[in-house]
Structures are given as C-alpha cells and as structure tokens.
Length: 356
Image (tube, rainbow, N blue to C red; front, side, top):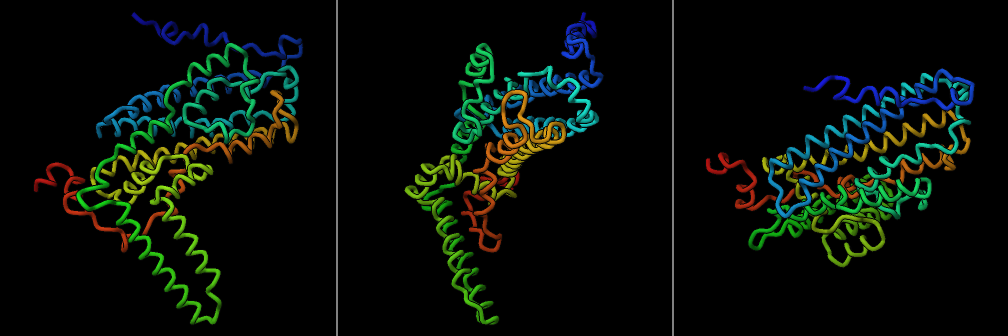
C-alpha cells in the first residue's frame, strides 16, 4: 500500500533546499523562497515535457484518428494552463526586494537559469530553430553530462515537425478537377480587386494619389500568390521567411478557412491552442525578463549572459510557430470564400448529418 510521504518522496523533496548563504555563514531569509520557486519551475517543466512528448507521439504517425487530435488538444491546453501558472509565479519571487536578492546573489555564481537543462530540452522539443538562437553557444553553459543528456533527449521529432507531418496528411483539399489552392487564388484576386476599386474610389472622392496604396495591394498579392506557387514558396523556405512545408501551410489555410465545418473544427481548435502555446511561452520569457530587470537592472547575469537584454531578445526571436500565426495575413473575407464542391462539403459533415 502506498503511504503519502513515500509516494511523493517528501523526505527527499523537502530536504532538497540548501541555501548557499547558510554555507557562507550569512543566512539570507529570502534565499529559501528563491530556491523553492525555481524548483517548482523545474517540476512544472517536467510535466510540460511529458505532455508535449505525448502529443508528438500521437501526431508523428502515418494516420492520426480524429479522437487523437482531440486528445492532443486537451494536452496542449493543459500545457498552456501550466505556462500561464508559471507566468504568474513570478509575482511570488517579486515579493523579494532587489536589496534582499543582493544579500545572496554573489553566492550563486556561476549558477544560472541559463543552465536549466529541462528548459533547453523543452526549447528543442518544441522546435526552436538553431538559426534563431540569440546565443549559438548556449550549450557551453551546461555540464558535460547535461550536454549529453540534452542531445540524447532531443534526437527525435520536434512538436513543430510532428504538426507539419500531421498537416501534410490532411485530406479534402483535392477532388476530381477541384483543387483548394486554385479556388483560393481566385478568391484572393477577387478580394484584391475589390480593394483596388475601393482605393480608386476614395482617391477620386478625396483628390489624392492612389499610387502608394495600389502598390501595397500589388505587394500583398505577390505575398498571397507565393504561397501557392511552388518555386516562389521554395524561395520563402530558402530565405527563412517560412519553415513549414507548402502542403502543411495550405492545409492550415484550408482548416482556418472552413473551420466551421464539423470535421475541421477540432483541427482548428488544436492549431489555435498551438498558437496560444507559442504566445504563453513568449509571455513566460518576457515576464522573466521583467523580473530580472527589476532584480538586477542592467547587470550581467550570473551565468555570464547579458541578463535583461539577452532575455528580451529570446522573447522576440525564439518563437516556434510563426508560420501558423502569420497565416491570418492570408485569410479572405467570407463573402469571397470559395464554395466547396458538394462531395467535399458532405465529407466534412458528421456521419449522421451527411446521411441525412
């Protein structure tokens, strides 16, 4: 039979706080808060890795049942709630004043959150591209054993890669002579012609020059059409403007456009949760930045990074799912959304509805 403290290993857990200030004979009251807050960060990182790993396993297959997409949604939503909790956890550590932190900070060198192996595993597992790294030598801060553990833990498919593979399998985009991208290109051109007509009408009424506005619409059109043309899309991949494959990108656009169709609603909610995940991870980074700025100002971090400046750059640059977020730029209004062929529209209904 399980006993509460043994099941939770409480004797070990509660004996894992050893303030450095005590060892130096200058006990600092707030160091215990500092230790426990960071230990709970690490415990929650462990749970996040469990959830993200399970989602990768469900998606990285030849066929993903709809019920598993629902399970992936539930688990990513859980991750998002955990990350929101961790964002709020910074308010606890901020009950410590900067002066109280200075009482023990010097004893922490060279220890730093920069050395969090679990956070590095999470970054790689999500799919942070190495070319986006603010510091390319970030692994040098880890011990040899942790570097080996990091490499071993991140050899498999990333969440980004698993989602890309799943999206590439999305059916419904072709049927007979119908191809979603051809119909969507027509819708884009219709929308942009409406925009041009509106610009010319306003220009005529106000006596202004429409040249700049029309040039912007032309640029928007090129951006739209690049999604559908193989060579243009290959250029976007080559120059880093996009990471996700063309097939996966068009599938995302298809799901977003017809999100109210019963069989696409769950995939849409899942993709929306992934966009939220990218947001809450960035919020955690940003909130961390604000906390560091409050505690040490513009001082260099204990791990040797530039502190506040480094953390701010990671919040801005190290996002994973920009390809999904940016697709809102390419959505068209409902009045020009192409109508689906009856065969596809029927297949996108629930079984009983389709039979009815």
